[in-house]
Amino acid sequence: MPRLSEGMVVKASARPIFREVRRAVSTANGLSEQIRRLQRESQTGHEFHIFWVPRRTLVSDKLLEEAGVLGDVNISELPLYFFPLEKDVLSLELDESFRDLYLSRDVTPSFLLAKALMEIQQNHGLFPRIIGKGDNAKRVAELLARMRQEILAGEDANETNRGGLTPSTLIESVIIIDREVDFVTPLLTQLTYEGLIDEVFGIQNNQAEVDTTVVGAPSQSSTASAQARKRKIQLDSSDKLYEQLRDTNFAIVGSLLNKVARRLQNLQKNYEGRNSHKSIAELKDFVSKLPGYQAEQQSLRIHTGLAEEIIKYTRTDQFKGLLEAQQNLAAGADPSSQFDAIEELIARDTPLPEVLRLLCIYSCISGGIKPKEFDQFRRLILEGYGYQHILTLNNLEKLQLFLSRSSPLAEMIPMTGASGNPTGTKTNYTYLRKLLRLIVDEVQEDDPNDIAYVYSGYAPLSVRLVQCVLQKQYLLKVTRGNGASAATGGPAAQGWHGFDEAVKHVRGQTFYELQKGEEKAVKARALLSGGTEKQTVFVVFVGGITFTEIAALRFIAKQEECK
Image 1: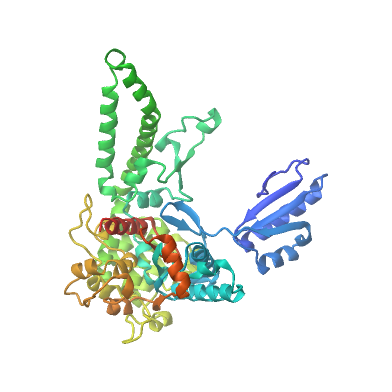
Image 2: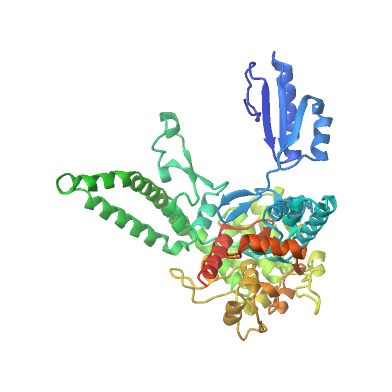
């Protein structure tokens, strides 16, 4: 059965036609046009089926109705929420969630996230603790509470699944972080291996599309596909070499690849004389290991090619200039001292997205840009890249990413949270840089002891906030003397306690909630579980997360596993 896609020609004999779609506005009009064309041109009657993922909406029905095809299609919804990208990574795969949440102020992504988390609670029990920072994070927590009440209100008192709404014995807590509490981190250039693959080639659905001159053509491909210029490379833990490399700082990737190459070379030498020196049993053992050996060799060739291409990119003057300016701003250098460097990058025709990233870092860290400098940057961008980008600059201003200090928006969001107010109005990087030790001068990239290794000396604020909850004693140790108060007791039981002053200077609402269930049901769940399994902590980012932040979270997970 064919799937309906843009520009396709369907044979007259093909009757049922299916299409699954995620976004209503961007696809409904195109679908309607294709349906009308098929009805007009085909001699065979067709059945049209549309599956909206993850849900059907009134907007989608209205768009199809206005196009005159609503009565000609069978519409269903496919409630797919989380997609498991890895054993430790779940994603909604909502590509436009950032734009929806922060520019359009559309709360749909928050609702879908809450639905996805509610499914986890229904299957595994309630999150015993819900801890979070940011307005959108708070909205998700409120939606979870409302959904729980709706389920309870709709249940029969005798239903057996009521026990499903008791605190889980397998889950310790969920930490929800709103992306807008830390806009600087995703703007910085990622410096892990996986992060730089994303920067240079782009990663989508665990795949990167790479030129065959870099990684070679697929070994088992037809002549036609072998001549194709692009090849999709699978990037996940099924590739054991990639699993070893992905979260490391790129500075040590070369040495790791060399070690693997030498090991494979030695393995090959050991079997070169197998015809005269090896027994039948040893030959059988070699043959059984041959597929794995060949797969590892192929993986080594691919990652060596990717690493060489990334090295070319990182050795360019453009990359060095961008990275130096970014790191100077992150470290607290006077932003005005970077004016000439940014001006030179624009004059060298550096790609606009890279220039805008740098300017947004400047603005976010400094609470806006001096009016004279802001006007100068704006003029240079419009003259250098085209006046069509005035819309881009206006959108960045709406997002509060690129602001003049004289802007009304900048005046509305002072840099510090009010005393006693748990809602920070803007993230104060200048204050937090010292309080949470965001800059680590002597970072150990080959044997890291702090999350700062992922940015070669900068600890992402978003992940430091997670440490405020999960690794209180460690964070108090590294920030001792910086104004953090002493915390006692278990970290999860106290939420943000010990770092209350720090979170006041981070944008958005702060919350810590306990979820309880009926006493009998709680005891029954604890008895059934046995209480022997290690508990899981869910860390949820509303609005997106970078591969480098994932690497930092994995680093924390490894530290916690060793305890």
